[in-house]
Amino acid sequence: MPPSAIGHEVATDLFGRLLAAHGPQHWWPHQDTDNPRFEILIGAVLTQHTAWTNVERAIATLRRAGPLTAETLLAYDDLAELVRQAGPHRVKAERLLALCEWFVTQGGFDAIEAMDTPALCKALRATHGVGPETADVIALYAFNRPRFVADAYAFRIFERLGWCPAGQGSRRYERLREQMEVALPDAEAAYFDEYHALIVEHAKHSCHKSRPACDVCALVSICAQIGVMPRAVAAE
Image (cartoon, rainbow, N blue to C red; front, side, top):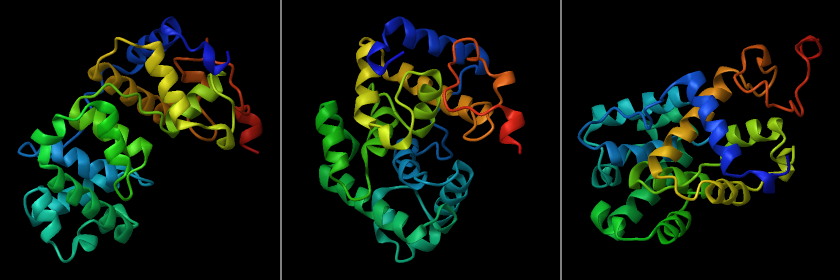
């Protein structure tokens, strides 16, 4: 199935299969009940190129140091040390500071809420260290905007299904995001929230990067298994 053929029925069928297999995921996970939305901004930056367990440790360290607010993070002289567990910590600290400065300059949540979704995502992408995926994660989870997060897990699954051209060089973030949003024109943020979480869960549960567990995969009946090596071969 070429990417252009991802229609409403196909997209909703995939969602249903994933939901039946894994159940509701209740994302975005957060620790701070006082400032959960701002914690999402922090987590979206810290999770770049690292495991979520490392992000949780870094956020716990930040919470012990003080409240999770932009003003507090901007005041730290040792922010890089505080987020060391989510390394590369110096790069992450620079990106967090840039996002905090943007957040304060814009006037906080109330002012940012007034932006329409394209303007919000454009402004986020103009911030140092915030790429398309991070911007969409923030827009979706912190601002309740309906955005499909076309992350590496989504590409892995869609490529194996035969819905996307296979290979890193063929991946186009905006193309996949737009195709899914066109296929699901009436979907609300909560739907895309659950979709993203289910894709991540499925990739971690069975559609592994190498040696996927196709024998326990909920999508095996519809999967073309493009690029998947048989387990006996992969194990050699």
